Amino acid sequence: MARYTGPACRLCRRVGEKLFLKGERCFTPRCAIEKRRTSPGDHSGRRRRVSDRGLQLKEKQKARYMHGVMEKQFRRYVGMAFKKPGVTGQYLLELLERRLDNTVYRLGFAESRRQARQLVLHGHFTVNSRKTNIPSYLVRTGDVIAWVETRKEKDFYKAQVSGIPKRPVPSWLSLDIEQMIGTVVSQPAEEDLESGIDTRLIVEYYSR
Image (tube, rainbow, N blue to C red):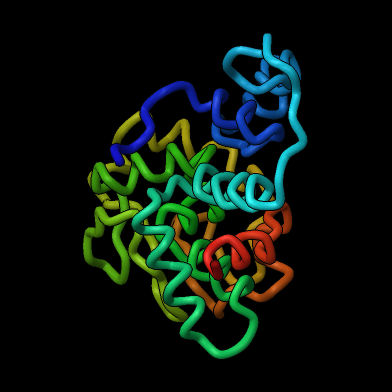
């Protein structure tokens, strides 16, 4: 399956809630959910009750859309979570949280995970002083994420970091605002994980 390249707001309407894929726009009246909460597509047919399987699928898709992960990669994360002792759903969210593009977003270097993914792909960041352009790279305790020095001369960098911190940095990360360097100080704790995802439904979906 190819990566989705259509309107981001259509994905929010599909799951019926904000996934914050458009950054600041999601907090304004221009947000598609604020304008129209109905799902995309034809609504002329009669409405049907959503099955348990449908609810599980919807929750799985919501987690995928939110983090910009394709099905094959998401299934691999689920497989890793099943093999890990402990709470499967919590470890799944921890894996998604530790992705480099999500870490860049959490540090406030990007307005959305989509933008963070693009910045990483274009080689704007280093991990432990090595340029890394893999959004799925899983950061570990002690990793240092910084902007590539040559990128700091660009107007985009100056505009991007002018408003930092735009939102609170989670406790598992630390941010040096002067140097614009982020450090992974620990593994994400339960309170740092995405609370809007019901992992129980996702685990049930893949347990069949």
